[in-house]
Image (tube, rainbow, N blue to C red; front, side, top):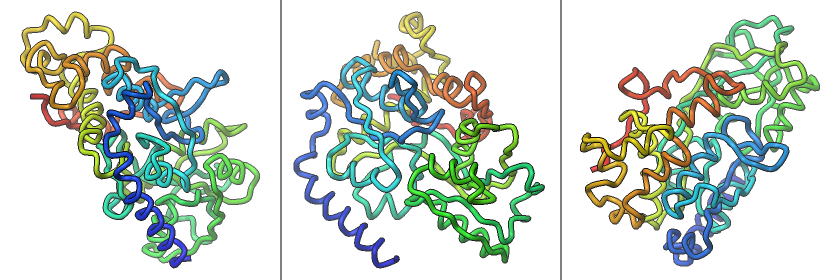
Length: 339
């Protein structure tokens, strides 16, 4: 198994090297074709999920929309490519997508060996456990001998192994290719427990026929900083994607929202002026128009708006801001200044 994983990693790196020249100017390619090709999940409420009409919503989707607004002036100019966990990295390296925005954890091995650059953190998460309340378990420390549904190709497999070994417990892994398959396996009784990032567990729980019969245990067993990524070797595109996220965070901190952004263009606050492009001429540094951040906030919103409507109080998931609050509110969301 280890040898196969090594071969896959080597193949991806080789593919990345071969595609670097062809994909070196993603901004130019995106501008020519008129849309951003964005890799998303196959369906995860709150992060990237299509409705009955095929319209995509979620935090990860809004990152894609923000990039399209900054580069093309229109947040709707996005082509969404659904990818499972195994497909996502190859799709990025092969040039099938311009941007991977798919609840993906930033790790050393992914950052250093897969030819990709993470562009920031959109959601600070951690792995947890979803159980049927009928199991009578209140803590992850009571899961010795449990069968656990796990999605293949994710960081969850190693995290569970580390946790159970550390606690001197054993478990039986039941591995599936997609998150939907893990939910169906859990619901069908193939396993006692479903494990994933806690945000994903809340999203998967509402897919159950009887969600009130399931609960998320309190333990968080890992750090899972989730964020978008791009191919290495294209610093211009890398800067655009990360500053799209930074613009959303800075806008919330400065009190600029989709509802008041037009009024804020007349603000006397120098930081707001620079962010919205009324002074400073910062767009040229990124290769976009000076009002790039104005377009993001006007069409997509600031980070707080994106969080609330997708996973927060104004969403079915009702997840509290927690670590994803602004640094000034006790959270970890912090962006460099636009200056």
